[in-house]
Length: 542
Image (cartoon, rainbow, N blue to C red; front, top):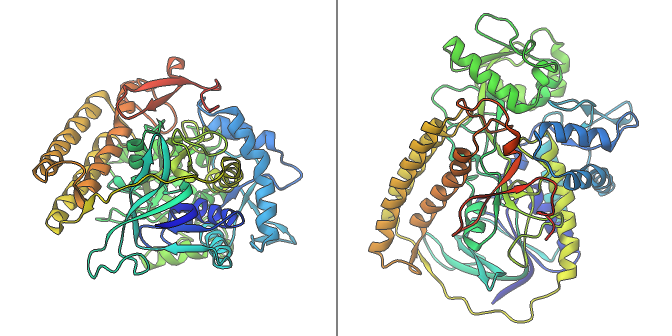
């Protein structure tokens, strides 16, 4: 039996930081489906939001977060974030994290939805990489942390609503002697932390790594966890438009924070009459406005113009983005084409304020978690600070829970048939097209119903294939991967169909206004009908 005190699933900031903090309490295994530097956190450009200046305070940060969240934020969760965030920043600076400075003080940026400069950044536009590298360095310092790359989570080992470990498929030589293709491996722990990221790579156009397809959400749903607010998908307003490419290189919100302008086909700014903050309006408004402008212009992109700004400032502030744009033949100091792309999963696996889920000994942190902070629309740069604050709280809570007294027996269930790989790739492509067509920036009842119908057809194909193998527990790697994709698609579209209003990252052209009757969380649980829960009730107190 391979046993640890903690298993951390995922290698983004939430996972690495949790691993470091957990290593102060016991032994830790980190598993990641690809490489440790392949994550949304690593690719994050904008920064991390926390109150660090005298002309700002947590109440203003809370207010900005609540406004962006469109009435679905949990007050207590937001209060924890904005009040404990500065402590976590102070902690990592003391441990060696280097943020950018100006005249000896922290350099603070401004992003959409914020009324104060409170965005810390590092390496100009490389904050995610710098802070992830910092977390990797802290993990490397600890002898009691073992990192298993190329190890994919298949299932949680759950019995009697208690999690005892993870079931993985691994090609890592430290875990398997299999020559080709890998094999199923089981790891056991006192506590399992699911920090597996979001779902946005199931869309055809995304800023996320291609591995970010919502495995963690689907697996937690299967284990019995409640899933919240999955209809709210944040589309980043400004992904670099690259013809014939599903991958959208992210052009940070901070670029607009430095007064870049969005222009339509006529060369005029279109955000000024739409919102008082113009290009710095909350992301859902900017993304939707860009989408409508593209339709109006008959163009697949709008123009982001920086030619009125100081080129030296741009090169200093955004060296990475400038270099990447140049690689694709564009000059960031002039004008570049941008279009929205799926970027962030606002909903996820429900957790309380200590990271606990409905399954005992299972914690969730980061984008995979639904803490009640993001509401219907994440405020820019709140995600990285959420990783730190709630991973820290979860590790501290785990100490109170204590160790497992005895582990149940679990048998292996998975095999891999490479003949099913082509089917998985076909399902993945079809799901991406379905999501973009029917569950994108602008949705409708007719479209969502059609999308769900298409997903059901694919589910039947996969079920038939599985039945031909004799059904469960004889599971096949590629068929299960396909089922997880289809599960995530249904978890997004089903509540989107029921939410007959527009709010935050969910916009219905047939119901274009917010309706207070829907100022509720959507709740999904395996084997149950979709239900709702009130905001700021006792729903998160468990």
